[in-house]
Image (cartoon, rainbow over the protein chains, first blue to last red):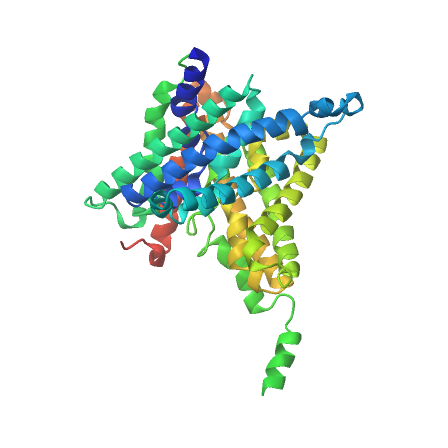
Length: 205
Length: 221
């Protein structure tokens, strides 16, 4: 249990998707104009990462990796399908996003309306594919750890996008040099936030 | 009248004015990174050294040119409802090729790029251009558009890589350029430039310079 909490905290703060790896930057910059929309996108990212990372973990360990197919019989033990990783992961993500969209639409129309257009857009958010690829690189011991990593990464993205949205709402009242307005100042702010998040670096959990 | 215009379009030279624009616009006024804000993730993550930046830039040019060409050739056969999955599959297949080639020929760079080669798939620049251009245009202009946008992406990538490696490690492409005499006088490499946040600030400054030269790009809101 403690291990799971460690992985969660580590992926929220130390290995933050946005500030440490710059994943999901496109939607992070495009959707962070107001706090309300960014809460919607952040929640959707947590949700989708929490589902796709464990599914891709199962795929990786039972279909794609070297010898992962050995449960089919001894003659499959030497099969290595890892070159198919990208195509399988992105297919899973696109399919899961579609599925999640349909389920939410049926089960909870209010949540569906509040997430709105963000759900389908998430399929091409680099943070989602990045989450799965990092999961593959880090060799988690079991499914629970992978899930915890997925949820943690999503939460990290959630915190980051809400933070920048709040700052951008306030900065409208400041006198920023004209060429720096909009995109430029957002980059520099993100850099400063990244420096703040670096204070978590080196914490051993 | 219609016949003459038809003739004109058929005899349009390969590098007509319009096609040149497709190549040159994304380098400056319509730059994918500083103006369209697409494909930021990789710009920031792999620009610590010029070498990784260059390999990444070449990979993106290759993937983007061929993806635009293929989607443009297929554009009449793709049902609109499933176009995103078709596009992702085409891109993913091309990226797998690039990944295998990198692993075979420049293994150490491929290790350094780690997951970011795979992330070319979700690089919004590629999806964005496929959606915006390749789906409604002929193969040759689409190909040029892909190459142009990838080149616009590449120069920002190389510029960020140049400053980060020069100021952060005092070298370019791994060769030391700052003479030892400087270090004897107490010059220090700015270790801060190697850290992730400085990539963001470097891009921010590039945008600042770019927009102060091109006044009509300034964000009025």
